[in-house]
Image 1 (spheres, rainbow, N blue to C red):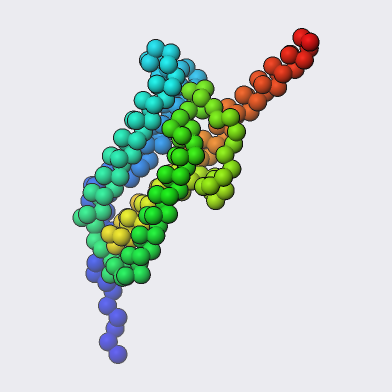
Image 2: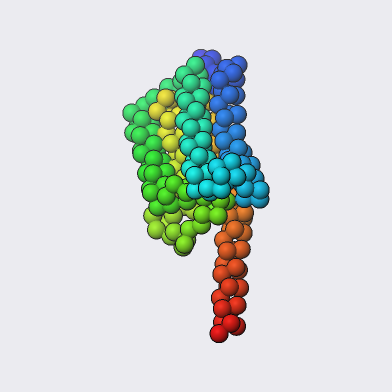
Length: 211
């Protein structure tokens, strides 16, 4: 019996600089918005830049984050082009799965933005623009991070659509980066609302004393 030949095609071509540029962009975006948002919360740097108009400052940050997201997606797509394809990822079943993942990811992202609004989606909490109540309906009844999970699904779906193992690797990196971001964001955001609730309770207690 003839010996099995090992495949000669690389799964991932690490000699391509575009792969590392894409990985950098994926990590940079959440790092950027977390640093800027915390500076805003503590020092009001953007609000002061916009003459005390916190909502205008929040919209400016939203536009910046959205633009960086488009650049990140472009760099991801460019990184996939020179990467080797894998035959098992080019089957019809995988293509259907890819479209399903992309559609599911977009539904999570769009429905989350619709539920939260622009300021709720793009860190309005750090500007003092707080939600009245916690949103528990769709898509938050499926996942507590629909924006991040939806984005991850879209990255994975795109990787499968292109049939590129490198895309799967980058999608895994997206997941890791977002999980790290959530470790920092969730406690900080919870602290913002806990402080708001404490201030409301204190004001209510003072009001009762004044009667």
